[in-house]
Length: 219
Image (tube, rainbow, N blue to C red; front, side, top):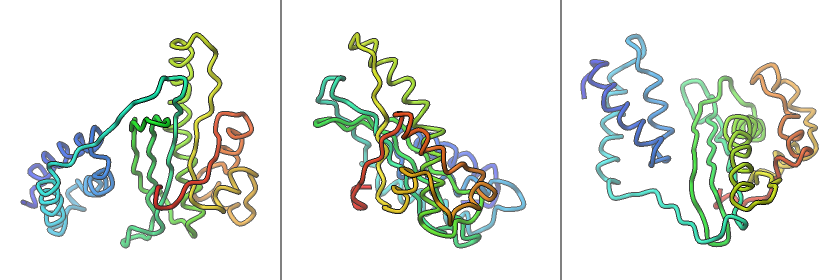
């Protein structure tokens, strides 16, 4: 590796394309590295991290993303998996939101999209971090996909589709807040994160989102 930004940027952009297309496990490290691609921020330590990422790619070159469909479209549902870590970035203690959108059925699991995004301010609890992730996932991934899904399913089945998108949650406190729309201890989130805690609750009330429990290991 070289500390020259041009030398570093080219392979990182190629890895970013790969991560968005077929290796969602690479989204977090590649997004983190590319955020330093400016002259004042890129350091020798980032060269080392880039080298380590390339070594991991070589080690995992046989890995492949797999999707399979074994059900008719009538039995399929859109499923959203939003999650977040807490203060994973040791430099500024900010959390990272992760979102995965899939089509699922009894014999179907097909990944559609995935997002990894660093939160803009610190979250003070895992519940706060996951509320932010759920809002982001619903707004930027879930609801837009649901509009297209309902149209396609209606066209293919000949029946009006009113299916909600299934949002999986492994945090009981986050689950309860999304169902009730009440979070007295998170009143500051509207000012710090710029989110409306009522957003997902409103989608639940409007039958656009259905919240379900999910085992942490499965998440």
